[in-house]
Figure 1 (cartoon, rainbow, N blue to C red):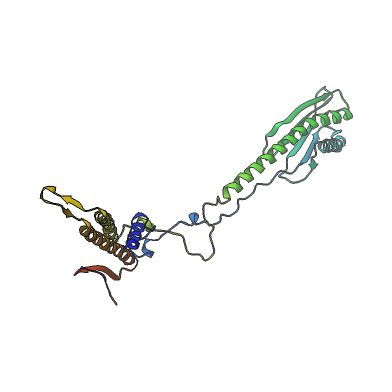
Figure 2 (figure 1 turned 180 degrees about the vertical axis):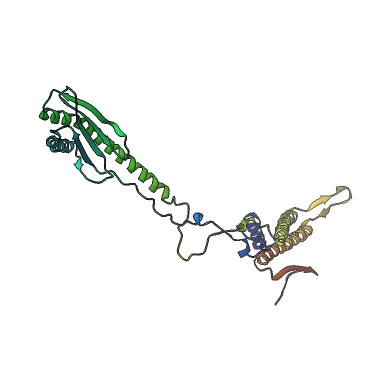
Length: 306
């Protein structure tokens, strides 16, 4: 008796999660919803990385308008500029995608003696980089003085080229790192496995309503526990004296207590049976197990289709 009460209490107070949930009327496959490929953890192709800019530049010297001395001063200016590039760890290159140091020397013309010159450092456009454009003149000077003056101003333009290369590469590194971080999975999505079935979403099992037999079983168990409690209370009460004016008649509640205790225990057992039946019925709806009462006998009746 006490064992059945403990079983009923454990089932009423802490039913197992997901127990006694009615089976869905729709097939499980019909409720599956395929997720889009992006949400199934399909690996993305790695982003294309931007190339860093090499610490190199091409040099173009134009002395066609410098007069007779132009052909002689051209290689000397070239050598002077290349030496200045080494001071900033910049090498001379021939690739068209590299920055270009363009120097043009022209004779002043007229009665003036000397030359004018322009220095432009460009990369990817006709416009010079910031601080990379200089203009100068060498009036009443000889060829050697012009080469010295052009070489000095070229160092200023090359210093700005060094700053430009460093800032350009820093921007490229930051962009590549950001692109890699955006393409890297965060870990919240499962990785796709070749040949694995598509992920699906369906109604949760815990969201299904509780089977009606389970509800009835819980109700009977609760009523049975109440009956057992009342029966125990009546059974242990002492005999009471009734109307002392007519004698010492004693009235006992022991027998009614035992009767109530038996009824409560039977109800609790029936509740346990209904709960178990409801659970089995929800898992196997083709069969049915129901309690049967009659003639002071409590039993279970099982039926099914074969």
